[in-house]
Amino acid sequence: MGMSKHDAYYEPEDYDDRSYEIEGRAWELMKVGGEYDYRTSMAIAETLSELDKDSAKSLQDVIDSGDYEALGRKIIAMSCDYMEKLAMQVAENEF
Image (cartoon, rainbow, N blue to C red; front, side, top):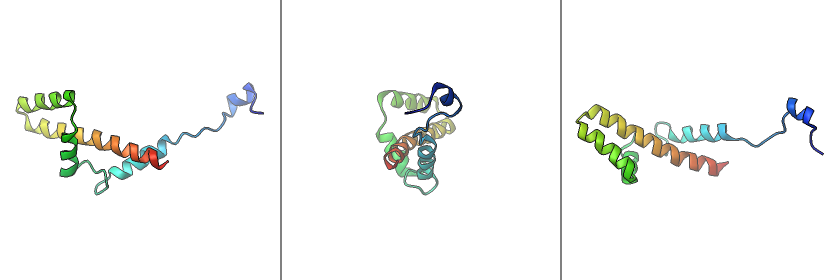
């Protein structure tokens, strides 16, 4: 029959929100030595091979600045974002 509005206010119905589990699994996949570890040369190569036009322009702007420390940070951040997206897809499929 379901809950009355009064009961639902105090005791919400169960729902299947597995976002914490999915996120945790994704980070597990991304840990050092994991399948989606973003700190590897292969992950960086894959990330760079999948750049879209806007991301390539953003990277080129940092390259043109001549700030190689910023370039390193940019590449690692891009790799992290890309590998996180892949790991999240895998984790979602597992649940």
